[in-house]
Every structure is written in C-alpha cells, then in structure tokens.
Amino acid sequence: MKKLNISNSIVLIISLGLLARIIALFFYGDAELKNEWSALLHNFKISGVYGYNVVINDYYAIPKFAELKEEVLPTAFMPPLYFFIIYFFDKLTNPLMNVTQLIIFFQIFLNLFSSIILYKIIKIYEDKFFSVLGCFVFTFFPLNIYAAVQISSITLQIFLIICFLFFLIKIFKKTNNKYLLFFSFVSGLLILTRGEFFLFYILTLIYLLVFNKKKIKILLISSIICCITITPYLVRNYINFERIILTKSFGYNLLKGNNPNLIVEGDLKYIEQKFNREFLKIKSDNQYEMNLDNLYKEKAIENIKNNPIKYLKFYFMKVFAFIFIDINSSYPNYYNFFHIAPKILISLISLFGAILVIKEKKFFQFLSIFYFSNIFLFSIFFILPRYSLILLPIQLILSIPVLRRIKQKSFL
Image (tube, rainbow, N blue to C red):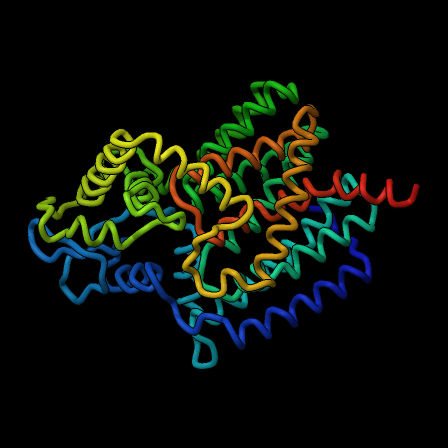
C-alpha cells in the first residue's frame, strides 16, 4: 500500500482508541490463554502435534492437556493461522510479558491499523466527513474494543477482511499485479483463519468474472496464489487424515446449532450430555475427529429431517439474531445498552443500505451480496455475539449511501 496520508482527526481517533483499549485491557482483558488455544499450545509444545484430543484408550479420546508420553491426535477442527501467531509470540515471551499480553498488544495494534485502512476504503468513495465518521464508529464500537483485548481470532479476521476489501477495490478499478498478489495472499490467510471463507473467495471470483468482466486468466492467477498460500496446511492434513480438507467441524457446528434445545448461540451441553465420548466407541486413531464429526452431522441432519418446519423457523430466528438481536442470549452483559444500542442502530442503517445498492453492478453491490451471504450461511449453524464483528466493516461501508441521503435531505 502507498504511504498512509491521514488527517489530524484520524490521528486523534487512533490515539483515543488506543487509550480506550488500554482501559478495556485493565478491566476486561484476558489474563491467560483459555479454551482450545491453551490446550493446543500445550499439546503442540509437549508432543509436536497440532491437536487437543488426547487418547485415553483405544476407543476413547478427549480434549485435554496432554502429559508426557500421552498420544495427541492431530486436529482439523479449526484452521491454524491464529495458532501460528500464538506459537510465535510464545517464543517471544520474557520475564516482563507473557504470551497472552504479547498477543493482546499485537491485537490492539492490528485493530487500530484496521481503523486506518477502513478510513482509506471509505475515502475512495466518500468525502472526509463520512470517512472520518466510519473510522470513528469502527474504532469506538464497544464490542470491537472488547474483542481486541480477548484471546480470540476475531480481531485477526476483521483485519484480514478489511485488507481483503481494500485490495479488492483496487482490482475492481484496475487490475494490477501487485494488488492481485496481495488480494490473493490475504484471501489465503483468511481461509487459514476461517475455513468457510473459501466459499466467499469463490463467490468473489465469480462476481469478478460475471459482473466486473475480469479475464479468466486473472482469476486463475489469483486462485494459484491463494492455493500456494494454503497448500502447506492442505498437505499436512492429507498426511494426517488421508484426504484433502481445510477443516472438519461441519457436523459439530451443525449439531450444536440444530438440536431440540433450539438455542441461537448453540448448545454445547446438549452434545456433551447426549454424546458421551466414552460410550461412542470411535477408534482413537488419526481418523477419530473425522468419524466423530460425521456422527454429529448424521444426528443433526436427522433432527432437521424429523421436524423441518421447526428448524426452518429456528433458522430465521438465527438470521434475526445475527442482523439485530438475540432475544434469549445467555452471554454476560449481552443486553448492556452500550452493546445493544450501537448494534441495532448500525444493523438497521446497513440493512437499508444493502437493499439500496443491491441492483448496482459495482463494488457496493458485491458488498451487499457478501453481507447477505454471510448472514444466510452462518445462520445454518449458530450465532455468537462476536460474529457481528465480522460484518462490522461491511455494515459501516453499506451505511454510507443511507447516511449520505439523510445528510442531503437535511440540508434541503
């Protein structure tokens, strides 16, 4: 990217944004690695295997911290990019800062840099007022501040999505080898962060071919670069699982979000209670995770087939929760005014914006399609509060046409 020429307003926003995140770190920041990340790091360091399922006996394996000489089974449950970052910073730990602190400070930097790139994106299409406004809202969006001080891949994903959009705009305007390289490489990194992004990358290439009239040669080059980026992980998976896969979590996610308890956020307890691994009798080898996920998939599909109307209604409940609000959330502080009010307001404006530009064969039309595709895909599974952050940069850009019209009418 060219040298960033940013105004004093943006410097002030970023400075105050840094202060806000430092304050959030003091009150809400994670103090240590947690959930699957801590187990993955521990098990990799003790066994050299990227995995968290540990063999208990020939037909029983569970997620846990492995002890010396215990067998760790390789995992394909989630893509590895965020783990690579954790492992990298673990190597940089020192008496003054632990791995969690290093990661969070890295995420704060990444999050604030994302604000600057988003400002540059909006500035391509709009005047300084809307560019600064978009940067301000993104920087001080409460959930965005909170996410930056948590051990979660969401901040990394947001940064990569914004970079993806920035380079895509450049390609929309004029194909440039440099931007094509960056766009394709970032797409590969996004796939290594969230496996389902592969579908959105394919959607993007199709849109560029059909509506932006890009040559097939250009799209093939992009595909090759993207594939080169993810190939080492695909090779690793083929060696371990004897198949070419990005992730193997479809069945788990489908069952978590489609079971009789009908919880929008997904119900992990249902899986743990109904499918006790000790009694499933799945062989504890490299295919363990594959076979377990297939079992979950079969049960989820069975649930849906037995009562399709119920789960169709539930699907639209999840769509509503993704766009606006989950009316039965169990997450602490979910209904806090500073979370709910900004979310609903931005969701309403961006929804109108997405509908407004859907017929335009330009970048904004692509954004609208991308926006709705994310909502409809993720709602097949379950909706967590942080998922809305994935769409926040897109929502802010889509809000601009609506806000521009409101501004124009207000000055008539």
